[in-house]
Image (tube, rainbow, N blue to C red):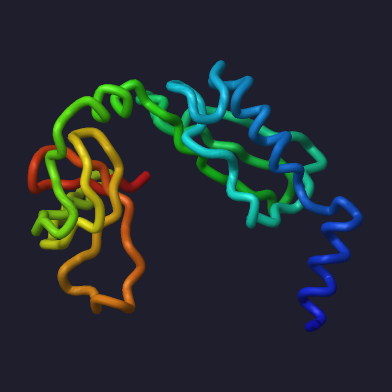
Length: 164
């Protein structure tokens, strides 16, 4: 066992890490909906995270006016910040819509931020309806070497990756 793993195991045993279940409860209280429900977190906070315990308390806020994700931030010096995606009503409606993009389709990936927008060709790794989030891969990426990118389906053939 390496020294790093020993330190992580010791920190976990002493409770040095943030309680991820407590974060889930705070997000549910903030959104007013439980995990998995419309308006609540899409999934629980990833249990693989090892966030330092937050002594000054957590701050929760909406990431955007669309209320599509919650920002959970530790106010300590050198604190952390995570984004928790929220299940939108569009996901329920999208489940009843036909797929706008199918796995393997050639697509255009639009990446936009404040004051810029670029696009590139890519491939859909999942199928989905307008408004859903799917995995995509840029055509320029090596097929087995690049990690997929999460993108939202805008219309058939077009996905978007908004940057904060």
